[in-house]
Length: 105
Length: 105
DNA sequence: GCCATATTTCGGTATTTATCGAAATAGGGT
DNA sequence: ACCCTATTTCGATAAATACCGAAATATGGC
Image (tube, rainbow over all chains, first blue to last red; front, side):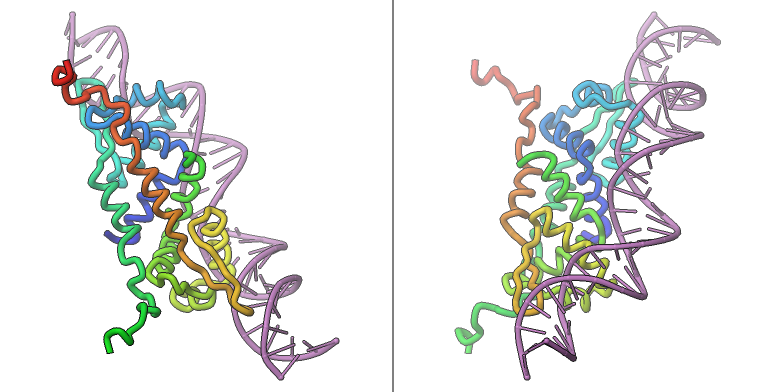
């Protein structure tokens, strides 16, 4: 993953309202939630919710699927795992204190 | 972890420059890096770096330790793991399609 | 105590963002 | 075709942020 994309995803999750939206979707699991359902639970203006959802969808963290007139939203788990991997990855790769090269010779 | 704190940490990592700083520290491992060392590698104004570092420290993602006149910065791994845990946690907790309660009776 | 160097604070500017209500659009059922 | 409801776009405003250079501060060596 590129730093640019990771930072956009992290920024998306870094707004309290969006994090709440995202967690609500994560908790909802496979069946997801309609935009309207999210609005009921979170209690913000529909336009604000739409704006935040767009951001989460654009960054790949959330997917949407039409069902008649309603839009079902779901957390996209592969994206979440990739992001988590990016954060934990390469830990200590540049470390200079490589424990003790004396053990190698 | 509270949503408020998690979102502040995510927001901190959501700026490309800060994510770069953070990753540089993660890669540096236990020995960490001085502020000046970070500045050399990243190439931004010292004041800007200081601003970003403060944010990372305030949110608990980075720790600092004085060594004479220089400040050593280190990624604080427990914070990172807690944050990752927060994201993955409670997945599907509210799911309605609980696979099939018929198996339970 | 004074100097050298590492880091932070200050001041300022340009950009981005969050939020809302109202109006527009989309998509389907009848 | 028409209407109903779900969702998005528009327009506007207030607040937050990123960034820099210059000046201030901190810490320790001598």
